[in-house]
Image (cartoon, rainbow, N blue to C red; front, side):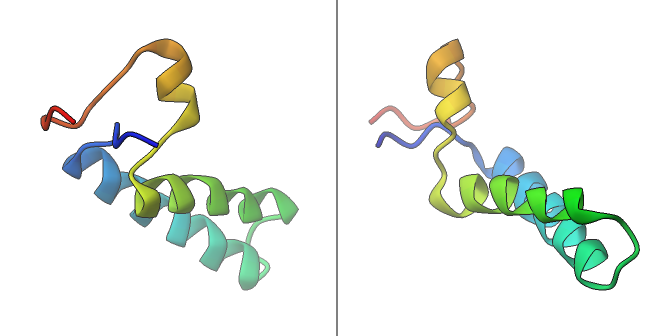
Length: 63
């Protein structure tokens, strides 16, 4: 897996994922809040499969 998620993108994904999971855990939102696992995982692993399919790379490093 090549890194294709940049720093700002990564931070936004992790924050959004944690917020969604917290809202789902407290019952504020429905089951769909657990979908926050997806942006959290893509932020932590710095790899987004959708970016690969679309040819997007927000990471400034060339690897």
